[in-house]
Amino acid sequence: MEKKHLTKQVDPKFFKEHQEKLYQALEDKHTTIEMMDQEDPLNSKMVLNMGPQHPATHGVLRLVLQLNGELIEKAKLDIGYLHRGVEKIAENKTYQEFMPYTDRMDYLSPYSNNVALCTAVEKIANVEVPERAHYIRMIGCELARISSHLLWLGTMIMDAGAVSFFIWTFREREKLYDIFDNIGGHRFTISHARIGGVANDLTDDALRMIKEFVNDFPQELKDFHGLLDRNRIFFDRNREVGKLTPERALEIGATGPTLRASGYAYDIRDFAPYARYDEVDFEIPTRLEGDNLARYYVRMEEMQESIRIIEQCLDKLPKGPVRTNNAKQAYPSKDEVYYSMEGMIHDFMMTDTGICPPEGAESYHAVEGPKGELGYYIQSDGTGHPWRLKINSPSFKNLQALEDMLDGEMVADTVVIIGGVDPVMGEADK
Amino acid sequence: MDLELSETLQQTVDKLSENFPDGFIGVYQSTGDTFVQIEGDSIVEVCKYLKNQLHYIYLNDIFGIDRFTSEGRFEVAYHLISLRERERLFLKVRLPEQDPVLESVTDIWKSASWMEREVYDMFGVTFTNHPDFRRIFMPEDYEYFPMRKEFPLLGIPGSIELPSSTPDTE
Image 1: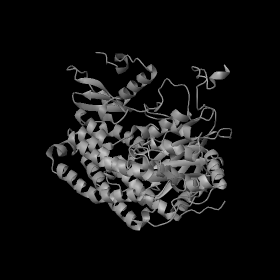
Image 2 (image 1 turned 60 degrees about the horizontal axis):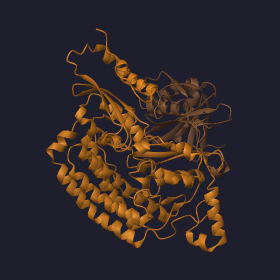
Image 3 (image 1 turned 120 degrees about the vertical axis):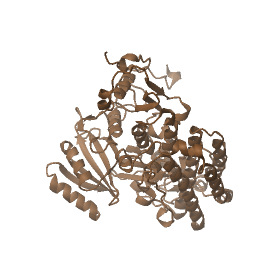
Image 4 (image 1 turned 90 degrees about the vertical axis):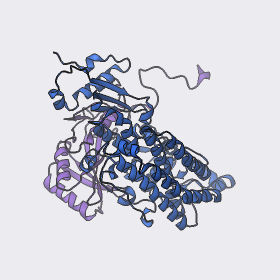
C-alpha cells in the first residue's frame, strides 16, 4: 500500500505555502522512526491541530501534533501569530520611547521588562543610577515575578483541572495590580522604570501596601502549598510529565525555572548580578527531576525567595533621589520642567533626541525575568536610536524546549506541559 | 585598543588564535563584553572546540546584524556561556551581501535550530545542514526579510497602498 502523505491529505485555505511546509516539517521530523512504522490498519493515527486560538495555549501558540491513539508521536510548534516586529520598531524610536513597547512583550511582568531595557541602555551609555532607584527597581521586579508566577500557578492548575484555583491566585494578583497602580499610576503596563532611574518615588501609600502584601502573602503561599502538595490528582497529573533531563535541558536551550527544575542553578541575579542583587541574600531553588512537578516547586520557592528579597530591600531602602541628575542622560524631574526654562529644554531634548550612547558601542545586558534570562543586545551608531536591538526572550527558548519535550507524551498532558513551561507569546513572537 | 580580559577569557582567546590561525580574525571589547571575530568557514570547528574543550556548553542566542552599506554586510553573532567559568563570549561572523550562507551549528547545540531560523527569517541568511529550515515568525509565503535596513517601517513596496496621511492635499 502506498504510504499516505500528510501534505496530500490537507488542503490549507490560507498561507498555503506556509501550511504545506509546516506539515512537511512534521512529516520529516525523526524520519528514522517514520520508516519503521508500518501501515496503520486501525487508523489510530491522526494529526491534531491545537491552536492558535486554544484557551490552554496561553496566547496564540499553534501546535501540530501527530498522534498515535493518545500518544504524541511527534510535535511541531508554529509561532509568529503575535509577531509585531518590536525589534524593527526599536530601530526607529529613541530608547525611552521604546520602553513602553517592552511592557507589551512579556505582558505578565511588565516591570522586569522595563528594567531590562533600562539597565541595558544604562550599561551601553554608562549612566549612573541612584542607589534608591536600584532598590525600588528590585522591589518592582520581584513583585512582577510574584505576579507572573501567580498567573502561571492559576492557569497551570486550571489546565490540570481545578478551576477555582485561578480565582484565588487572581485575588492575590489583584492586590499586586493595586500596588503597581500606586507605584506608577498604571495597573497593567506600568512603564515605571526610566533610563537613569525610575519615574517617581514610592508613595507612603505604596510602601504601606507593599509591606502589607509582604506580610500576608507567605500565609497565602502556605495555603496554596497545603492545597496542592498532598493533592493526589495534582501529583498524578504532574509527576513524570514533560520530563527534561539536565543534559537535554541545556542542549535545547531551556532557561529560567524550566532550566532550574532540570538541575542547573543558572540565574542571572547570581550569574551576573545587576541592580543590587549582590547585596541581598537569597537562594536559587533548583530541582533535579526536571518534570512538571519540579517546575511547580521551583516557582513556588521562587515566590518565597522574592518575598525575602522584597523584605530586605524594604529594610535597606536608602534615602535620596530616584533618577540621575544629569540632563544629558535622563529626563529632568517634572518640577524642573514646569518651573524652569532649562528644565523644559532638557525635557524637549530628551524627547526629541534622547540619550546617545557612543558610536560603535555594543553591549549585552540581561536580567532574570520571571520566565528566564531576558537580555537586550544593543548596538549603537551614535544617534538616539539603536542601530540594532536584539531581545533575547526566554519564552522563545523555552518554547523550543517544549517542542522537544512533547514527543512521546500523552495528548491529555499537552496542556499541562504548556502550562508548566509557562510561555508568553507576546515575548516569544516579539 | 587595550583589552581587559579576565584570565579565563584570555585563555580562551589565546587558545582560539593558536588552534585556528586561519579562522581567527580578532577580538575586541565593548562596554565589558568580549567579541571574537572569526571566518564564516570555520564556525563549526570553532564552536565544536569551544563546546568540547573550553566548556562553553550553553548557547544562549544567535542573532543577526545588518551593517547596511558596510563591507561584509551581514553579521551573525553567537552568544555562548560557560557555566563553569561563569563567562559570556560572543562569536561574530561577517557575511557578504550577496548570498549570505553559513553552516548550521545545530549538530553541536540543538537549541541553535530556532535561533538560526529566526536569523534567516529576519535577515535572509541561509544555514546549510539545518534539519528543519523554514521561516519562524513570518509565513512561508512572505517574500521579504523584514529586519534588513532597506525594508520600510510602514508599507511594503508593491503591496496595497497606504491610506493618505494628509487627506486635505489630494
